[in-house]
Image 1 (cartoon, one colour):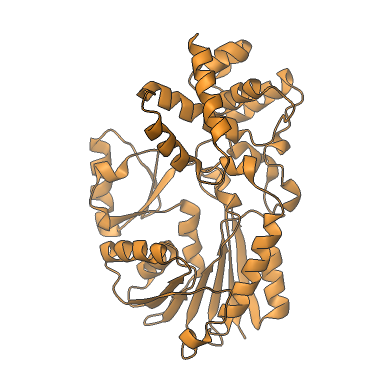
Image 2 (tube, rainbow, N blue to C red; image 1 turned 180 degrees about the horizontal axis):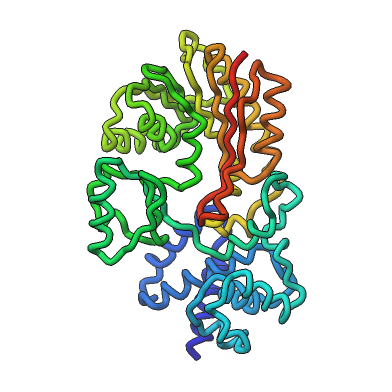
Amino acid sequence: MRVEHQIRAFEQIFDKYDGTTPLHRFLFAYFKQNKQMGSSDRRWATRYIYSFFRLGKAMPKADQILRLAIGDFLCNQTPSLIIASKLPELQEQLGRSVKDKIALIIENHPDFKPADVFCFHENLSNSLEKEDFYESFFTQPDLFVRVQRSRFEQLVATLKQTEINPEIIGEQTLALPNGTKLEKIIPDQKYYQVQDLSSQKTSAFFLPQPWDYWWDCCAASGGKSLLLYDLEPSVQLLVSDIRENSLNNLDERFQEAGLKKYQKKVLDLLQNNEQDLHHYEFDGIILDAPCSGSGTWGRTPEMLYYFDEHKISYFSKLQKTIAENVVRYLKEGKPLVYITCSVFKQENEEVVEWMLQNLPVKLEKMELIKGYHSKSDTMFAARLIKQ
């Protein structure tokens, strides 16, 4: 009866969730409303719903609970009642690699095709290794932390005291198991930033000079600005976003990081902002553009299930309009750094090609930053110089 209870809990959550809000927020509200669910019920319901969505659109005609069992088998190395009930022949294989487990599923269920997990494969950037990318959806990404150099060893020692053994990546970056309650272990957040590894790598495209004046035009909560400040503390900043609440969150992060030389503006970059910006000239612009977020769906696998392909062209048009509207405020010979967290060529290489044809810029370098080899997000970055 226990497995039927777990299935019923999964089905009730799936029936109520429609993909319009992030799954983690929905679950928080759902569990709050359904206080009769104990901690074990919540834990299993969370595992199952995430495992189900990680299967994407694969096996669309199969029984829903069989799909759940296959997703749970591919995503986890510990037993579950769903696997025992629906895939008993595979219970002893849970400890094998994801690649091996995919082969076992194909052998037992020939209608399973890894390419169907991410069904938008015709839109993928050409340099992406598709099989590795599809496989990555069955592994939870890590939690990455960028630490001040002077506090690095101390923070590592503190984590080890709590029996968390971080993976050290470079001089400032740690990888931790996803779900690590870092804010409880180290409440003082002024010495570190939670930031994905691929996002950190975009800083290689900035190359700021002392006393430069930069504009982070889609700043959100300020992660890229903090990267810039870490590279060159003398840099002066204008940060803008269409969402005032994002800029309010940014204030708190900047204060903790010691970043004080900045202005902020609430701006809609799809509109003419000449009245606000007519006298501005920048030594660099970071355009971390609104996008599909497809490179981050390993963290939000519900998007695999609910994303509509027509939104790709919507974001592509948005990105081109914003690029055209901001480049006019860039000094000649200075960089526009274009960034997305997308794997779609329409948002990445094709937007860069459009800029080269329609804006006074030349391409210095661009890269698809492939996070699926390092349990991180996949991002795109290009550095263009105004002519």
